[in-house]
Length: 147
Image (cartoon, rainbow, N blue to C red; front, side):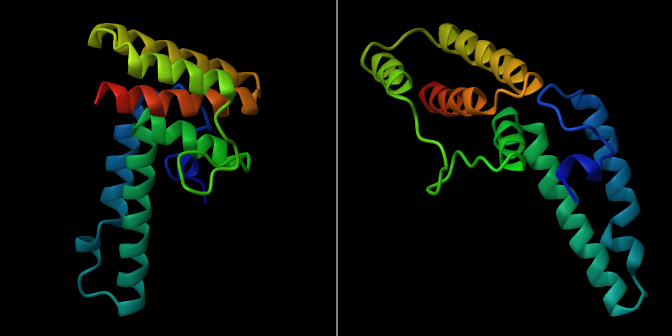
C-alpha cells in the first residue's frame, strides 16, 4: 500500500496539506493502539503496525523533499540516499558549488527553493522523471545551504 493510498490521495507533488492532515487524523483515530486495548494480541499488533505505517506516510508526504523523493521511488528512481540511482549532473554540481562559494541572502535561497518546488511539480505532472530527479537533488542541496 502506497503512502498516498493510506490517505485515499492520488500521487502528486502538489498536495493540499490541510486535506492530508485531516486524512492523517482520521486514519490515526481508526487505528490508534489505544482503541485495541483488550483485543487479541494479533489484532493489537496489526493496529500498531498500521499506526506506524500511517505515521511514516504522513511524515514523508507532508515534507516536500520527502514527498518528491517518495514519488520518484514509485518510479524506481532513488535519490537522497547512499544508493542513489541518479547522480547529480555536472551542471547541477557547478550551480551548487557556485552557491557555496558565493553565498546569497537567505530570502534568495528561499526563492530558489520555491522555484524548485514549482519545477518538481511540473516535471512530475509531465512524467519527466529524470529531470525531476535532478531537480530533487538540487532541492536537497538548497535545503542544506539554507540550513
